[in-house]
Image (cartoon, rainbow, N blue to C red; front, side, top):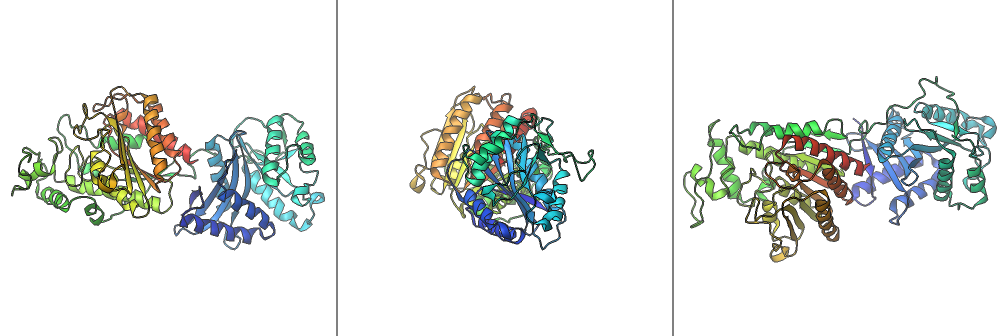
Length: 578
């Protein structure tokens, strides 16, 4: 198995390990070009604002060993990429690693909106070689790139005049159109050459060599050499479609959700919700990952053991078609619990529409395991993980359940992540995340925020007001954004931006996002009018925060909205990764 990982920052221990492996591989593959390695390291470690981004992709096997890497730059203003190097370990059998890495790099740049990819390569013309013994290697490399439609630029002085900043070596400039039919125009090529020479060699736009080479791009469109090593009809790139190689979003499904199915008329928390989300995710760069079992210890670390024991015990005793709804609630003498388990439902439940069934407990356990598996993925270095949970969890408090929620999936995952760094838990479901607020209300290591319909009009009614800021050590680490009816895309983004500013000031290591599609127009339980485009804007804002994000599915009860909202959200989130 091979998988690709994009390194965004050389900060975590895992990133340092991966970059060290890349460094070792570079030394083995290109021992004569160590100054380039120093430039790569300087780019990766610099925090200075730039007009380009560096892109380091590594290929790993199932054990996490680095099999190869590609390092490239992307200039968003010019919409061109420049490939520094693509390499696999010279002492291992290649097995197509280099080709897969190049295809993955093309895919990533195409998803970013790149018009094309440039790269330098040694010439296959003997008279241009300082060391003729490299001719065979150069021919092999040019044949490799020709397979993808990357061909040498001709009719310029780029390969004719030795570059003094490159020790006087002559090189070809190759251009890969990334499957786009547009020709390369001379004006665009000149702009790229000037910018690339500045980044690569420190040459200013007015440097005589830079000016000479840029001015030599006179043909418009720029001419490319005809395929030399492969028939013209085969010298074209495999598709650079998004998601072929790179799967930036790992998804974990609580596949046992379907056993929790109440067939009562009007019960909106149905299995078809998950099916609708999955339909929306078709053809997107999402990779399903198996759910791992985690035991009850993480659950008991967050929920009152009495609640955990009760849910497990009563569900095991129920008959297959039996439902238990709470009927009496202990406003008085809450210290007394009824002896009969079924009668005790009102002691642990906060409403009259969250029944217990024989399958509620195993389904809730599977949802927790999905969220914890997602947390594990973040700890292993993933940028995004999506726990497609059902039943949802954000209304489950430490000692009570309700709102279709039995165990708080997001809070349990957030607690697990908090053992490795500070966590922000942001709830963007239409309904206030009262359970998550209750669980972390006295803690300062998990900052809880919720954007929701005002509790004056919306469930849970008794929590979610803006004066609820935490208590004890947690004072100031809870923030609510209650909103009136009719919130549209622009208003939602305005409030979300404020919440993200709070999160940035908190500087968490992880973000857990409780995602609800019930903020969309037409949801039977909500009153906001967010559109699919608005869901995409929300995802762009979340993806731009720059830290690993675990998305945990909460509400959303319109099947159409679940499909359209999921597609818009995760398409935009994937783009933020690319």
